[in-house]
Amino acid sequence: MNFAKNVNHFISSANVVILSKGGGWMSFMARRLTKQFKTQNYKQTVAHSFLHPNQKVNIFKNNPDIGLIHHLNSGQLVTIDTSTAPKSQILYFHGGAFRVPMNDDQLQMIRSIATQTESRLQIADFPLLPTYSSADMLNFATSALQAVVANGLPTFLVADSAGAALAVQLLFRYPDKIAGTSLISPWLDFELTDAQVVSRATNDVMLDIDVLRQIAAEFTDGLSNGQWLDVFSPSDSLTGSLQLFYGENELLAPNDKKFATTLTATTNMTIDVISFRDAFHDYILWDKLPETKKTKKQIVTFTRDQRGA
Image 1 (tube, rainbow, N blue to C red):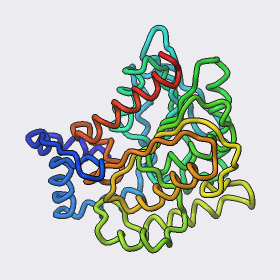
Image 2 (image 1 turned 90 degrees about the vertical axis):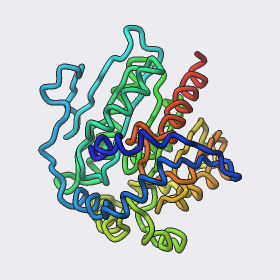
Image 3 (image 1 turned 90 degrees about the horizontal axis):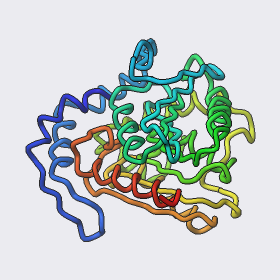
Image 4 (image 1 turned 30 degrees about the vertical axis):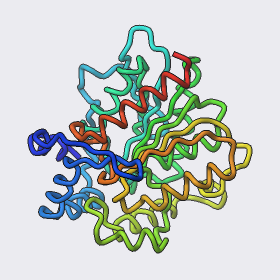
């Protein structure tokens, strides 16, 4: 959503942040921006971009800053070296409701994290609906992980929104290949019938629940029985470390809480949940928000700690 760049001037003047009693960050920037989204009916703009995306967009084509592009299973694995001697690598899965190509805001966000962690950036530019199916996406994601881990660098998964669904499938299948996972505003539930989720539908400023359900139906139609692991029923032998970031105002927040609670109760994973009181879905694409800066800082620290330096 390149709209993020258009509102930087709006939020740059509001830089007061306080800590709420529950431990979540409350940012006046996020609150003012949320009000602007409501006024402009930004939810409708997002819904239109999901249903009618321009899939001809390819931010990697003819881009001199991009390294290697490896065409793989109907998608492309894009490699960008942010360090001459990388200490790890980040495999990134972008959001966009499985339909929208990766955009410049997402590239800027993940590249800044890779640079600060001295990591090689591996972007999983997966095939999109409706031309390709969810099975195609899963096959690509698996092939991308296999290609990435072959170089021996510690591999971290970072994903936002819909991209997190693919990342979690890899985590559940290949936990021994992943050094750590960071999820931001993940979309993990494709039914969207939970009463707590439904009750948030009207007030969410970013996501239209009916549009998400429509896309979810399209996504699940491409899967055969057993092909997609239930993220709310993980193996009790699952290990690893995971960060989960989300805004408490998000439509999907109840699912995020359920996911974290389930992993904590039934697996051997170490889970760190960071919620922001006033953040909206995929807030991390607005780089001037205090919530974004805090999230990036925590991902950088997590990555360094998990690899040992």
